[in-house]
Image (cartoon, rainbow, N blue to C red; front, side):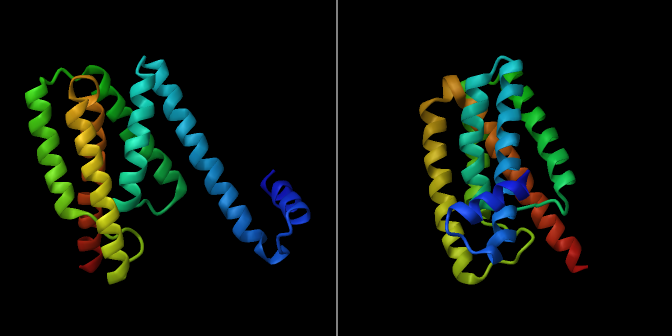
Length: 183
């Protein structure tokens, strides 16, 4: 299917045939990401936290993109880890009984640690200029999400705590993986 789509794009959109691999890779990534988001939202609706699942994804994706951290070595492993983390997060969101004060303390501690750590190298080591760009963008996203967390703590506090927890887990896992590879 992807081959057919790429052939259509090449013939109808003035794209060079040598760019076919790039187009196919982009299509695969886009379809995979879209399918993952759709499944996440459907699972959220099945758990009766549809709105929360959408807010979760809207907060997780940009923060994760700039925070870095652990990346699985294969697509299958990535899908499995993502599914487990999503289910844990959604169960946390659905069944959490944290008071606003407790949520504020946990969320504040997590946000503070994230602010300090962002970015953590993933599979690729960042150049110094890239690290600064990722640090600035990642921290700006984190600050924005932390403000949203505080403003909406009574309704969506656990959503942001789940996002911060997952990103923090992946950053620490990335640091451990880097240290383990050095030995």
